[in-house]
Image (cartoon, rainbow over all chains, first blue to last red; front, side, top):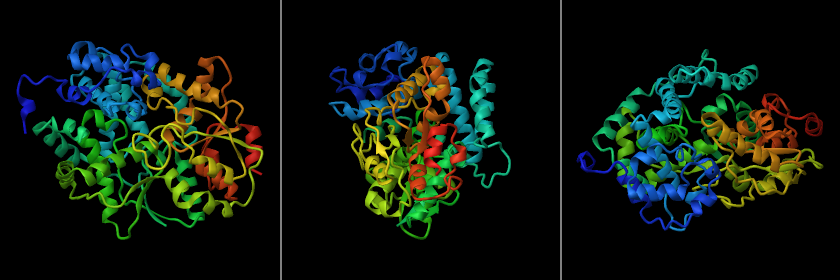
Length: 192
Length: 289
């Protein structure tokens, strides 16, 4: 079960096996609504993954710009799970705490921390914790006009009078323990 | 028709009007919604990159709760992102014995077991397939003729699971819009990504996606959506997208059940119309007669 704990397993091994059949046709790039913002096109990214260029991949913003629209996955002539592969690249970058991707990582982590504490998302608590972790005054300023509009409409959970509060710490902890025991199984499930 | 209802976090916060309109329209159409007791977040797009198993388990917790409730029925989900997450978990539970064992090992920490019974259904699927334009048309109390409506589907109710519509050129909303008496605006952007969370995490990229969709909708009176993420991107960020694009891209954006409810004669209040950020005056006059 624990092959992944062997020291010579490449960090990209699971994703390599997902995209190994790529024929570099470029359908993914042509289909991607965000390709024009990417430093590596999706097609280029799969080539880099197969070549094992971890450092170059980790400094890329390509996978961060994937908006999970599944157009590439739908159109890939080899039927490869490309959106899932982008998601796993995000996961590797977050696990390695890549400095370049710390804002989205904090965003995701604070979102999940809120879910862990309450079971459901609470926008105000989530956003204030996110702003605290990024420590960049420009970020809250960017959200302020929208936040005010939504608060005026009563569309933001302000944190009082909750009907439900279901802490999910036991579930989160159990999953963390299972992931630690067999971290590769996530990739295997993706290919199933 | 009985459904287990999974609103998801958006529908209790920034998308409350979607929740109100969904409940009102389905009740008027004779469908029974039973909200899943003690439902929790599906993990959104945040869980999967951190832990694939966590993403599946958070969604499966809600399926397990639905399975534990008395009556039968499909799980009905209005939010496309929640729909996709629940559907992914449901698919693993149903088709992958090892995956099911792992999910249930995780769920044992909260004393639950999920089997993958029933089906996970998007609201649009239920409206288009179970009720259908034929079922809804007799309920229409007035005609919204003269209104041109651009159907916006977004991504995750169509892809990667191809369940009820063409994932490239979806058409399922057209007969529903026509049943209200409104015209369907012909455009190519209905299945184009709205940028999703990029509007928050990479705004320069996300706002370009929003601007392109709004620009293509010029000439329509309004856009209808079936996803809280699509809705907030097109509705709440259109002022900023207009500024960046250097042109006025403002357009009214309603949820599909809000449009249906208006034609069914339900009140603006019951449909949460006061909660939409942008409803232009000309359109308001046409829809709130």
